[in-house]
Length: 458
Image (spheres, rainbow, N blue to C red):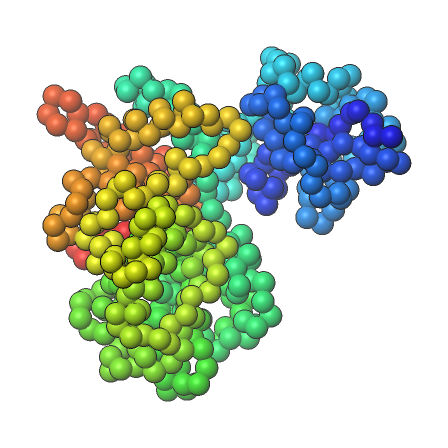
């Protein structure tokens, strides 16, 4: 007979959906079965969803800091949990407690630092540049980060859209490189142990240096550097082996295009070493490891490689994928009607791209809120990010959702890509005279500007 009560654990582990609540129910003779991640006070239908994996609430992959204990769930070793640092609240009727969305529930979540505001503070604490505190843990740090978030949200008041600002603050996801590297092929396969050389795609700035440092825990590479140095090293020392190259994001593929041009000496790139002989580019096998990839970025990269006949390049699976292309656009890439030039010069109509943030699924993100987000971004977002003037006959005047309409709500702890919403990373005064507004970024773009050619990096 199944007990009609549940245990609700509050997870503080990024591997578990950014601190979402974990719901468990006692079944049979005391085994606990996980139901699913929930966000309490958002939906009242979670109690009806299907059960998933059966496993205990305390394991190597699970760390809970708070437990809402239904009193009629017996044989729970509360004393052991408390001694291990888990805070416990005992509740008479857990179903009612979570579905009534009461002030008591909100108070409990706030006390446990589990409200959406607390989760936003934890998330922002991972952002390591700009005006934020790295890995904020103490009360003063948390208070400062919430002040930053709240100030950013209040900017939406000038558009009469505070609720949109709150939604975007909740949706923002700061990806930590150490987590992504650990989940990548480099971090999970023993094949990459003791590499002779590991390269960064676009130089050793904030991105490349961070990635190589994190990857070294798994590869223990003897040497590292930019991709140009890596190709030269392998041509000289180990031409039959594969050069592995790591990069944080494959967004539009434009950065990859610029890197190849620099390697071949077609254009200058301050962070890339030009090869002594352009033929070296096809002389060694190269495996590319992108920690985040988009389908439009992958299509662009494959088109570039095909056009330049670089069959020696291969793409490793990414820990994170973002799909934004419509079936129509995907088919045009497959047929050859679209190529990398259509992406680089902004020739794909926005109707064939679904910005990632508009397809994001959350229990609290209903259609009305999604429409409000889309409306505000389309009206104001483009003012923050005009299409770069160097593009040849672009289709659009602005990218309100970020580069190529990708509309990512994902940024990195070390930098914010231009494929993310401009509201997240852009600062300045925008709009026409008489209708101008000021805007300050929540997670400022932190790419070092080396020269004019790097200024439009996307």
